[in-house]
Image (cartoon, rainbow, N blue to C red; front, side, top):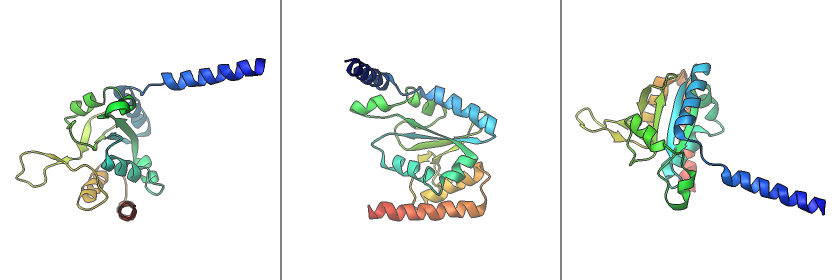
Length: 185
């Protein structure tokens, strides 16, 4: 009888812990990774994502790919914040994600949005660019393994990391492999 009671109690407690666990606030997570970046003397790569966003999943896959992750983690503290969810998925958002996007002059209507901050939390660059020198408005290039978008992404990485040209070439080649894998799916 005691075994049944203890088993029931454990199930109840585990269930409660899972139920009570909420997504951490975006600002709290950002502050934490900035402190880590200061300690490790790295920049911060922040990506903003949603479960419905295909290019967001491509970006995550590219950053955390078994071959690429070593290069990114050696140069950046990585942070993925979730926002812009719909319906039941709203519970997966990090509260305050939209506020952070706005704070750094991002666009909340277009995902993925990514930015690179220095260890003090100042924005170095993001994925909004002027597609030509006469453009008035910057556009979100999102993320894609395909050129020219991957070229712009890799140029941003080159400007904000200590990666060598050889390492950047390895990342580019891996992106090409991932593109083929996506097309075959």
